[in-house]
Image 1 (cartoon, rainbow, N blue to C red):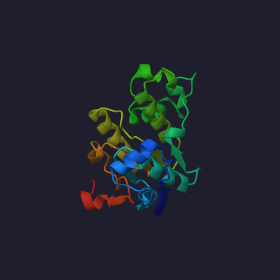
Image 2 (tube, helix red, strand yellow):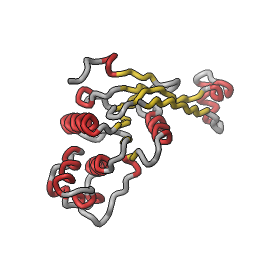
Image 3 (cartoon, rainbow, N blue to C red):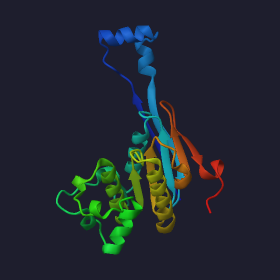
Length: 219
């Protein structure tokens, strides 16, 4: 088990124009009020191999900052982040996934790319949603211990999101790969069944809720 204790604070020190000053007066704020206001991204969570950690909260609340802090806390040789995976411009999708044909198909289908015509395109020819799923397949095939992904399932319809979440849950259980995911949607949480949910609001430390406190154990 690994314990992550993450903390980062951003102090607000804006350059005040006349319009900014007018806005502050409208809401009864002084310059000292603005200087004292700080956005804190912090959490404390226990993680075991095969766990899924889901960071959630409103857009702009600091989910991506927390995810980046997790990334910096993990040995680069042990983790892969979807945002860092390039899109090859001249190879077919099926040729970009390591392993033989059957293994490559397994990774792609787990990530939600099961259409043969999509597999024969280059990654740059895919839609934005498909490119996200291609990167997910690449991450699954990487053999890394930690997979990090921002905006998880945010661009997918409810059914596709639920299917991919269920497959990621099964992959984590069977391969003991740890997923640290961030997103605004909660519609697929029943299928994802994360060991911990980290709730982030606009200020203050995040709140960590472990699965045994919000649901029955997964069978």
